Structures are given as C-alpha cells and as structure tokens.
Image 1 (spheres, one colour):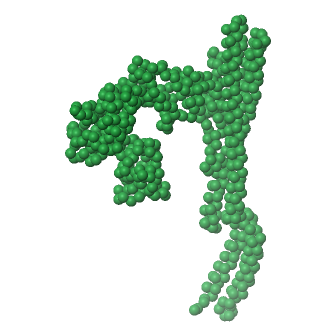
Image 2 (cartoon, rainbow, N blue to C red; image 1 turned 180 degrees about the horizontal axis):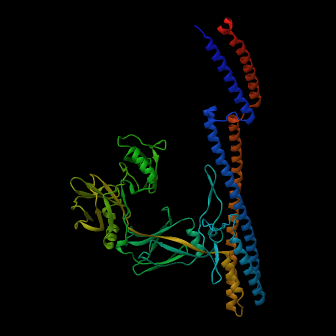
Image 3 (cartoon, one colour; image 1 turned 90 degrees about the vertical axis):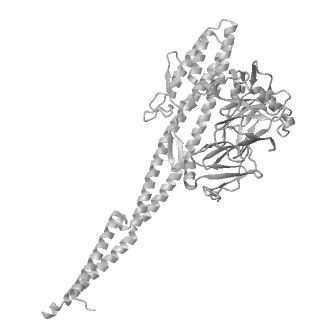
Amino acid sequence: MRISTRQTFLNSVSNMQNSQSKLADLQNQIATGKKLNKPSDDPVAAAQVVKLNRELAQTEKFQDNIDVTQRRLELEETVLESLNNTTTRIRELTLQAGNGIVSDADRKAIATEIRGLVEYSAGLMNTQDSQGEYLFSGSQGFDKPYVLNGDGSYSYVGDDGKRMIQVAPELFVPSNDAGEYLFEAATEAVSVKFLPANPSFITDMEVVDEDVFAAFAKGKGDLQFEVQLDTSQSVPTYQYQFRDSNGAVVNGPTALPDIAAGETVTVQGLQFKLTEPPVSDWVVDQQFKGVKELTVADAKTATALDTDIGDITLTFDPANNEFDLTNSLGNPVTIDGKVQTDIKYTPESDLLVGGYRLKLGTPVVGDSVTLGLPLQQLSPVSKIEVTDKTQYAAATADMTAVLPAVAGLGEISIRFNMPASTYDLLDGSGAAFMTGVALPATPTTIALERPDAPNPNIPLGISLTVNKAPTDQDIVKLEVPAHTETAFRPEEKRQNILNVATQLATVLETPVENDEQRAALKTAVSDTLSKLDQVRERNLEARTTIGSRINALDNTKTSNEDFKLFSKTALSSLEDVDFAEAISELKLEEAILQAAQASFVKIQELSLFSFIR
C-alpha cells in the first residue's frame, strides 16, 4: 500500500492533538478534583450521579424535617411538663381547700392562686413555635386554640388534626398533638347518640352509671341493640342483646317480660324503656348461596381485578371452610401473586377478597357466587318483611311438630323452580315441607304459608319481594326468629383543665354557712380531684408518646446519616479524581506528546522536496 507524505504528516499532527487533548483533560481533572466534569465524559456514571444527587437532596430534606419536628416535639414536651407541674400545684391546693378547718377567707385565697394558675396554664396551652404557629391548635396553626369566653370559661377552637412530617421514604411522624386530645381530658358526662335517629321501640335512654357504661362501651365502637322474639318457648317471649361494631355479641341475649305496655331495662349502666316494636321494624335476615350481603370494599382493587380478569366465581368448600376463585374458563385466579385456591374463611363473619366484602352466613355444599362490576343484586329476593307479628310468632312457636329441624329457632328456605315458576319451602335440614307453590307475575310479592293439616296454607306472617328473575334451584335461606335493631354511639363530654380549675375556684369563693354547702364543697373537691387525675394521666400518656417519637427521630436521623455517607462514598467513586492515578497519567501523556513532537520534526524532513533541494 502506498503511503503518501501528506498522510504521514496528518497522522503525526492528529496524534499530537490527541495527546494535547488528553493532557488538557488530565490537567482539568487535577485542577478541579473531578474526573466527571460533563455528562459526555461517562454517560453511565453521569446518570448514576444524577440519581445519587437526587437521593442525597431528598435525604437532606428528611434531615431538615427531623430537626424541625424534634424542635416542635421538644417544645411540646417542655410545655406539657410545665402544665403537669401546674396541675400538681392545683391538686395540692384542692386537697388543702377540702380540709375542714380551712376558713372562707383561706379558701378565697386558694381560689385566687388557682385563677392565677389558670391564666398561666392558658398561656402555655396557647404556645407558639418559632414560626409563629400555635402548637396545640391541630391543623389550624394560625388559630389560637383556647379562647376566653364572656362567662370566664375557656373553649377549644382548634381541630383534632396532626401534622404528619415525612422523615424517611416510608416514615411519617406527627410533629404536634391537638389540644382536643391533650387538654380536653376530664370526663364530665357520658351520653349516647342514636344512629341515625331515635327508634320507635326505645324511649328515655340515659346513662345512669357513667363508670360502668364507659367501661362496657370502651373499645367497642358503635353499639348495636337488638330485640327478638324467642319462639322456642311455648309462649313467645322477647330477648335483647348488644353487639359491638364488628357484630360480636357483647351482652345477652337476655329475656324480657311482656313489653307491650313498656318495660324499663338497665344494663351496663344504661337505662332505657322498651315498647313493643311495630311490625314494620321487624327484620328477617336472609342468606343466598352462603352470603348475606355483598358490597365493594375497595373500588380501586375491584375495578382493577374486573378489568384484568372479568367476572370471577367464588366457590365454597363447607367441609373444610375453604373457598376457590376461578375465572370464566374455570382456571384459578391469582391475586397479589397468590393462587386463590383452598383459602380459609370463617362462617358468620366478613370475608374480604379482591376488593369485595362478603358478609357470610353458613355456606353449604354447592354454594357459589359471581363477583364482578357493576355489582349485581346477589339474591332474587330484595325485601323480606314481617307482615303480621301474631301470625309470625304463632307459626314459628309451634313449628316443632311440623319442622323438627327448625324447632322454632332455625331456618326456612325458599327454593325456586324455573321455568315452572313455582317455589318450595324447606326446613332447616333442607327437606321440603311445601312444594310447587305458584309464583305470581313479576314484580312478585309472596306471602309465605305453612302446611298444617287439616287446615293447610296457614300464613307465616312473612312477605317476600322478588324483583329479579330467579334461576332454577336458587335457594334463599331465612333466619328466624325476626328481630329489630338500632345502633347508637357512646359519647363522652369532656372538660379542659382550665374550666375544671375555674369551676373549683368559683365554688371556693362561695362562703360555707350550712351542711348543704359543706356537702356541695366536698363534692366539688372530690370531682375536681378525679378530673385532675384524668388530666395528669393524659399528660403522662402524651409525654410518653412524645418520647417514643423523639427516639424514633433519633434512630431515623442515624439511619439517614448512614445513607448519606454511603451515597457520598458512591458519588465520590463516580466523579472524584484519583490524584495519584491522574498525575501518573499526566506524566505519561507529557512524555508521549514530547516524543510525538520530536518524531514529527524528523518525519517532516523526509519530504521528496527535501531531496530535490
């Protein structure tokens, strides 16, 4: 191959330029201390540097949040400690005022000191942080939490919100506590609120023993009160029971005498008067294919499942209390990476699956339901009513002879026969005791009857409304006896320490001139001491919680520092220069450049024109 003089010349110049460029880069790296000065130096490393810098910035923000949260919590802890000391002093003064030898003048002096402590406490409860926000007003940081009313009492005008501060990728810590939780801690009274309204069969409900009722209702949420007919007796009698918000029976069932004329009942500190419920209030629970009720508990999850798979079928295995989920092709369904076969369930409880909530009865062999959106009516029977309480009570009371498996307290099932448009009645064992009853035209109202020779077709006093075409062999199970129910919510009326102390001061300022006034003073002192103990207990509880939060922040701060160190080490390995290596490369490039320059001087003299001269 022919090599021209021009080609040799250009190659030599190119080599010197490359060496000069490398030399310049190395000098720049040594000068800046960075081997990655622009993305083109190393695109992969540059992308990692961007990611690490973003993570470091986020961690720095977390550390700032931790510092702010710690300052707020430490300020809150200091204020609560001061308030606890103030409450302790008020308690000492209360005990002193309750001493029988203290004069009216002494009590008045004690009241003056208590009022001073109230003003001091009000100032603490309206503490502001360094940003000017009120510490105890919940989420309304610029609203003064406690205001003085015209009558000398104090009202809380904040809310119960907490400011959740992110201090780690998956950790949020409350940076404050609302005054409603911290200071409204003295129980003044316990009451009940009906949901949604006062039922017709309960009147004059009141709490007659607050301590007993508060202990009974604690942790149970909204309470459900049920009255039902016990038809297992020769003469049907009423029973009542309480359920908690999860449906578990927490009291009863307890027998009642005849309540037609009204009966006063006292249970767990709650007193109310019962009257016989009207027929329109009686409820008969129904069960269709093992399920009492089907609702959507998580619309997002249910929608995603319906979009991905479509309708799914839940099939019960009562022998093992298990179920399977299959798609339209009969193949098992997988949810969250788990194949939904042989999944355990508990009869008479709630079942959450695929975003749906099923209130279960007691499934039997062959029971299965289809889940899909939009949610379809589960049962062809949309409404069940007790139309005649007398007929119902009489029928269910003497069913023992006709329906041994029911014995007045079991179940009655309606089995639809299609397309014959008839229905059968089954007893608790599943045996038919009345068959081939014709269905009226839709919409259908079915007045159930029972066989009773020699006078058949005696009304049961139960009416069904069917507004969905049943399929052949659909079975709707009815639980008997019927019952009435109403929900109510226990509520506690609470006071703050400011009003507790102010009310005591008012009592102490009143002269004691007779035994009645002495008894009132004694009661006021006793109530105040009890409420002060509640306030101190809440104060201790809050400070303990704050301490645990501060410990969590310390641990998180340490973890964040470790993460920062790891990230900075990784970042340094990507962008920081190794000076020893860079200087060695610099010297090598200098030697290469000098050699190239010396060689170029010799090479350029090899031109043909040099020989011509």
